[in-house]
Each structure stands twice: as structure tokens, then as C-alpha cells.
Length: 235
Image (cartoon, rainbow, N blue to C red; front, top):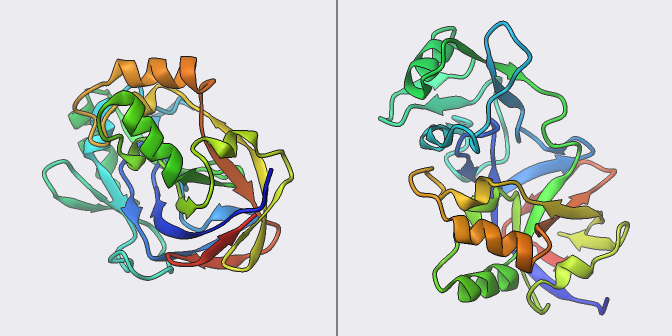
């Protein structure tokens, strides 16, 4: 793989798995992954069965964000705020949230619980060139949020070049050392639009058949660092 350079153009955090997340200007990233990312899951009450947006696309009408964020800071609080489809806000630890969510999603009873394995200590990165090429191949704009990435990068790379990244390959984000963990194997979730209202089955088929069912790449870092939009990237 030839050397490349670029910059971080956009960042996201997804506090609750399966719900919409928030854009951020910067975030702390370390061996745990991104701070505040995928820290909660939605479970069927009284069981260890979690539910996900691929099976409940209505979940994508719900949104989670850290109240102190406002899309600009990198700190997080004790619990994110969860917004209903109609806009009503709940603290994620509000005991009434599970009942409201269960009623909206057609489940008997739900609750939100912390998860220690939500990110597996990694961040998901997508490249603008690949997203642009995918949109061209599909003949319509494909939103990056479908893939629930943490970081989007613009770089002097050919489309889908990241598919050739070798495990352990070093990459610098904002002068900080990361390594390639593995390509991201996709589930059916990207076939749903970011709000779960329409499904694009042809997109899912194209990702499976044309891209080997991969889009994006996972990175890891052994140190806790701060990454922000505009940071230089190199590999």
C-alpha cells in the first residue's frame, strides 16, 4: 500500500446501539474505543436478548446524544439523553424510558443497560472516496450515517483502497498512532435509510456481491488521545 495523506472531515458518536447518534467536532479515543460510543444497548426486560435496528428499524426514529455536546465539545456526562420520534427527551437512566420505548416499538417490555463490549476497543472509519464511488455505482447518494461510522476521512486514495489495508498497518490521526484492526463486515442495517423509513435492498446486495460484504475499516490505538475534525491523517 502506497503512502497516503488526508484529513478528518466528519465524526459521529452513537451512545445507544441501534438508535441514531450525534455528530461531534472532537472526541476522546483510546483502548476502549470512542468515549461514550455504543455504551448502552436495548434489551428485552428480564432477558439477555438485545434488540437491534436491523430487526426494529423504528429504533432509527429514536436518537441519543450527550446533553453537554451540542455537536462541539468532546466531554460526556453520566448518561445520554434519548429523544423519542416526536422529540420528547428522556434521561437514558429514567425508569420510564423503557416502557415508552417498548410501547413505540411494539415490544412487551424493554430496558437500557450498559455494555462493556459495544465497540470492542475500536473505531469505525469510512473514506469519502469510497462513499462517493458507492453512490455513483448505485446511481443515488448513499448517506454515511447508514454505516454508523465514528470517523470519515478525505485522503489521496483510490475508492475502496482501504479494502487492501493489512491488519496492523499503522495510520496516524492527528499525529496519534493507530493501527488497522480489520475491515468492517456489514450486516443488513445499511440497507435502511438513516431514519429507518425505507429499505434499499439493492444496496445490501451490491455491498455483498460487489464489495465482499465489507465497507469501512476498524482502527485501534493503545493510548487515549483526542481526535478532531480537521486533523491530519497519514498512512
